[in-house]
Image 1 (tube, rainbow, N blue to C red):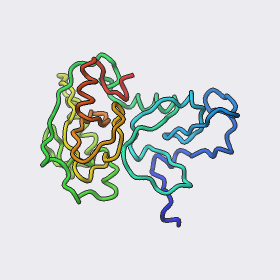
Image 2: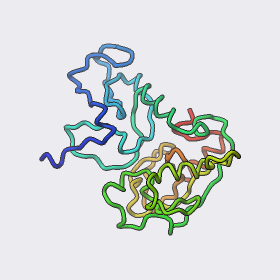
Image 3: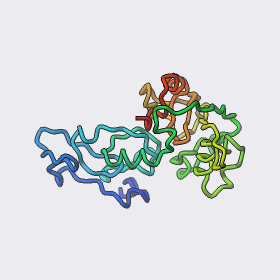
Length: 229
């Protein structure tokens, strides 16, 4: 039985899932719970009222806190309910160009299928990675398997590098492979799930959307739909 229980990630070690019967008031506004709906922040595990946990952000599986009483969940990035504090912390970790509403044009990079991870190559640990679909950096072609910090490398390339001359930000467009960790995850723009061979767009903050949805969104002068608020 114990083997089927959820095991905490490094992030979850520093947070705690609060029990419903241990909290009598919202951790933010301090309104006492009676008929007020209790909500768990999926990033810190604390309990809030519906009003104080109305934000939703796209969290990596390693950031999501789960009820330890339930079986281990499927590892995939997904939109989760969070409290105001966690929303602010999450937004602060995202590049400024994807938080501002007036960002400049973003260059699109079409990723060749040969640069994606081949079906059957994903291990359990890899399936939860933000880069689980990519075998090579789609910007410079470097093999991600050879890098100690592949996520940092790809993010830097997509943001134009760290040179003195600012470069245009980029985002990736590709078809989801058969074993992608994004399969079954909802696009936060249209609320439809990603399926095999869905054409997705992934920003340097690693938020993913249907390509058509993001294209339409960017035409309205907005940046990342999750962080550009």
